[in-house]
Image (cartoon, rainbow, N blue to C red; front, side):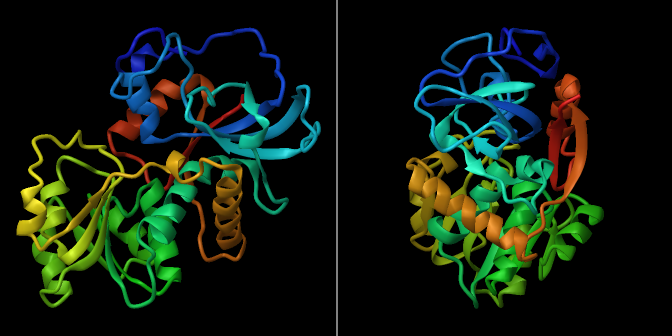
Length: 321
């Protein structure tokens, strides 16, 4: 929990009463919660919350503990996972609306499910809906070794795209190549836009997936071919400020979008469709979800520090102790 916005030090591991599910709600015994950049935005106040104190974390997996009145789809012991817009998944128990739960297949572990719900479903809507990537497309993925980036790279490779990925060091670049990047660019040492033009024979890419924000935005526009699509879906380096829309025309009548997962899974049908396709590509082996960092829930502050220092690759989870 945290009482006021701030750095990782505001997070406190406290003992509170176990909540009770209401009508159409389920109490989930959380086994693992995923860590995402959106958690740091909630904690810092960059995404203001309606009320404080607040929990932190938006995705988790576990088992059904009890169900509230009116719940017929779920029973005690069912293996479930979820993503919520309201933070609070980094806890031993959480009450979740029954319609927001999805069933975890028996051959996917709860830790893996916790690590991939937000990141995996984000990759799915970005690749399948925001811009439907197909064989022959050449795309650019920033932070290609990160949580969403590593899934994006694998899935795009599976779809037959040529994938260019950026990374901060050679170790992360090697991880991105292992996941299916055809080309990697060390953004601290090379001009991303110049390398993209070299790789594409001057044409540019059809779409850029950018979760970095301020430090990559302008360069990303310069990587696109005429009428290409700029997808900015995060801002780990800070918010984009002072943007002049005329830049889109100067760089080739470009398109710009700032999507978020929750608008792509608003209905239960959308949620089920998205999650089932994610589970399918994971079970088929087309996409793996590497859990490279594990922290106890009591050290959520430490996990936030490592994430914000860009010292993580793949997914990070917080484990029930």
